[in-house]
Image 1 (cartoon, one colour):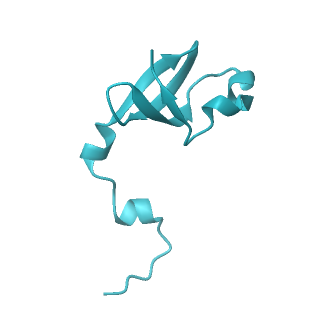
Image 2: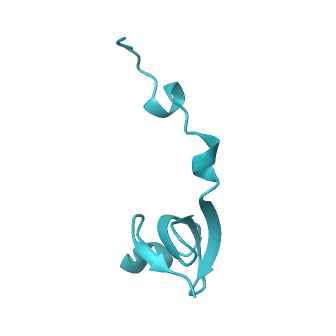
Length: 70
């Protein structure tokens, strides 16, 4: 089947609720982050939740970066 639509892929095929259960809000070095947990301490940054512009400029916390929680 071919579906021709101008709607975004996320609206036509929504993400399963189980994918959101892997996400968590954490504070790492004073920066609030939305991360996807991959193990007990390892995670991947999804989004920087801070309002400080300097936190967005820090390359250590760009989306997709893997970090280890203390």
